[in-house]
Length: 181
Image 1 (cartoon, rainbow, N blue to C red):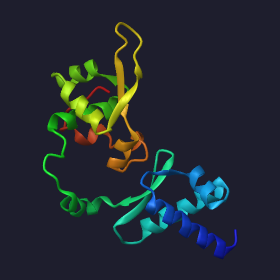
Image 2 (cartoon, rainbow, N blue to C red; image 1 turned 30 degrees about the vertical axis):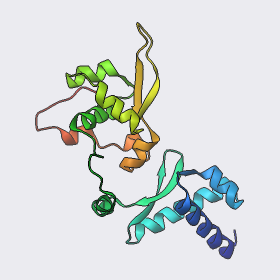
Image 3 (cartoon, rainbow, N blue to C red; image 1 turned 180 degrees about the vertical axis):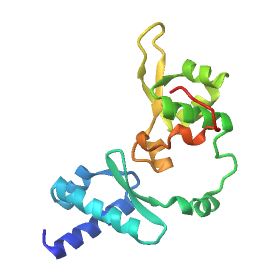
């Protein structure tokens, strides 16, 4: 790929990521700028590295099999002030429920309730409404209970490529405490 064409194409990819309201796949980006998927991926990786290496409030990230421009986590307090709305945060119960689902997915409502020790109807409904979790299928057995797991929106919200990037649970344990996963 010629240098001038390469720079123009990289600029076009950057512009597409900037204006897109949703993350875009490499295949879609390659199709739009009319290059091979491998070349598009190479340019996206270069762009992501350039954003990573320079100071600024933005970064290019891969979320699952898609790419997007997003803000750096350290800018979150300022963005929150800009968009602050009362009552938009998650309750402690919803956060605990989300953490259990994220680490134990796919998991049923009753399994979450066994871990938390309380009913989780309201937190699960809130998480479903916020598109942070979704139904992933049904467990075989009596009643065929719904299995829940996290969504692409969850990954985007927490800046993760996939759930394997969740911090190890051991980081949250008090010394001497253990947990069954």
